[in-house]
Image (cartoon, rainbow, N blue to C red; front, side, top):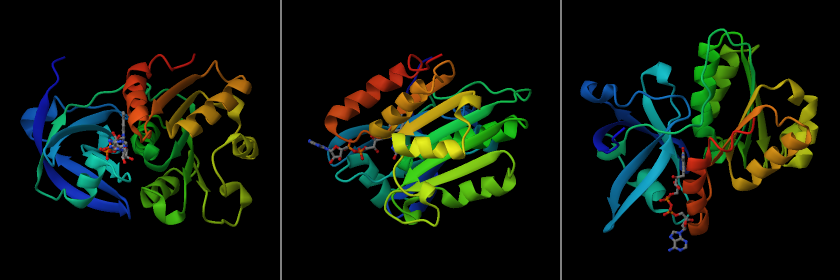
Length: 268
Ligand SMILES: Cc1cc2nc3c(=O)[nH]c(=O)nc-3n(C[C@H](O)[C@H](O)[C@H](O)COP(=O)(O)OP(=O)(O)OC[C@H]3O[C@@H](n4cnc5c(N)ncnc54)[C@H](O)[C@@H]3O)c2cc1C
C-alpha cells in the first residue's frame, strides 16, 4: 500500500476540555475509499510549525459506522504539534494527513458474545471510544467495561459521549471512572489505576470472564494492568497494548517502536 499525505479540510474543531480539542476532517468523495478505517486506527499528520516540519500520529475517536473522521489532541506541556492544534488550528484550515493505519483492534462479528475490557487514562481514551462505539453497535450480544482514569471530572475527555453510551447500552456498557485528584462519593472511584485499584475493581469486574482486553495510556498504567492480568492468569486472552502517551524525547522512540510491536504484544 503506497502511503502519502493528502490535504484535508478541517470541518470542525471543538474544545473538549481545557487542554484538548477534537478535530473533524472533511473527506472528499474521491478519497473516501482510501480513508476507510477500522475502529482504533490512527492518522498521521504533518504541519510546518515555526520552520520545522512536524509529523504526529493521532487515533481516530470516531467510529467507522458514523461516516466521520475525528481525532482528539491533548495539549502536552511544551509539545509542538499538540500546542499548535489546540491554539492555532481552526475550522476551514487544510492539514496534510495520511490514510488510516494501525492494528489496535480486533475483528468484529455480529454473532460474537464477547466480554471486552478496556483501561484508559487521559487521551488514551481516543482509540477506545472508537472501539467501544463500534463494538457495541456491531455485536449486539457483546458487552464492554471501560475503566477510565483522569485527574478530575473536568479533565475527562468525552465524558458526555461516554455517559450517552452508558444510557444507550444500559445492560452492555459498564463505565467506571477513576479520579486521582478529586474525591468521589465511592472510594473505589478515587485513586490511580494501579495494582491496588485493580484488586479493588474485582468487586465490579469478573476478570476471568473477559475475552479481550485493551490498554491505552501512560506506560506506568499499561505495565500495572498487564502485570496484574498476567498474575491472574489471564494471559490466554488477547491483550493489545498501545504506548500512546509517552511524552519525552526518549519515550517518543518507544511510541514508534511500540506501534510496530502492537501485534507482537497481543499475548495469546
Ligand atoms: C499510535 C499513536 C496514537 C496517538 N494518539 C493520540 C491521540 O489520540 N491523542 C493525543 O493527544 N496524542 C496521541 N498520540 C501522541 C501524539 O502523537 C504526540 O506524541 C503528542 O501529541 C505530543 O506531540 P507534540 O508535538 O505536541 O509534543 P513534542 O513536541 O513531541 O514534545 C513532547 C514532549 O517532549 C518535550 N520536548 C520537546 N522538545 C524537547 C527537547 N528538545 N528536549 C527535551 N524535551 C523536549 C516537550 O516539552 C514535551 O513535553 C498518539 C501517539 C501514537 C504513537
